[in-house]
Image 1 (cartoon, rainbow, N blue to C red):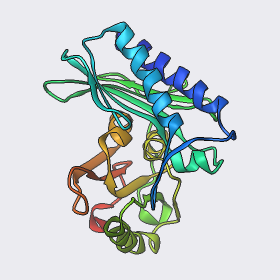
Image 2: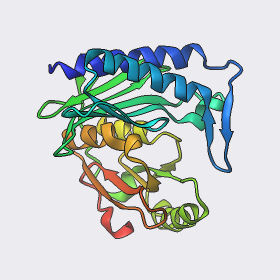
Image 3: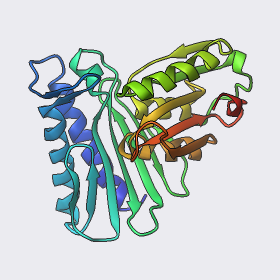
Image 4: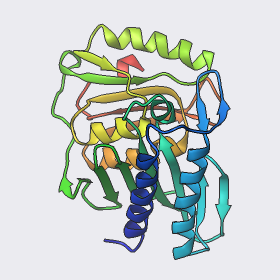
Length: 252
């Protein structure tokens, strides 16, 4: 186990405890957007994670959803989503997580990923060259190989153009699969593919901090991830992740 993984686990666990302890309480809303919500607790969770990481090494950089680029100019950059699934959290839906990845700042290669669901007490971990784990046990993607068998989650993003594109893709997928699900957390969607609960995930517009840890998990667990610049919002990504067995490319 590298020296970075215990830091990521500590940060994810402490942030998870913070957001779990505040679940169901009166929450301070920093910004209420048309299709999104920003909470004061997002910022507090981000700052707790940042404090833990920089206490270990102040030269590390942190790219986070809430505070942008901060930290030093060292070789390690952390990519943090302090609450992935904020809208779920706000409405009392217990499906959200903390997502933390670390990458080489120069090559951009992901070094590790941690996704922590504090409500289910589930923690996914993966390191470069290592096995993906759920609560310390090895995991693998599903073996379902036809769309008729598949359970696919589709993310609907925050802009009208992303919603319109997502609706069109959803119609093409939904008729052919066993079931579709819309769960509200990109990181958990990827974690669920990595451990075989879901078979594929598609979203038109997503940010790096939503998926950095999960992409590594899926690939290490035998799955396949396609990312590309989003066609609906510059600076964001399109993503399609699957168990690598489904013939999903015709739907993209």
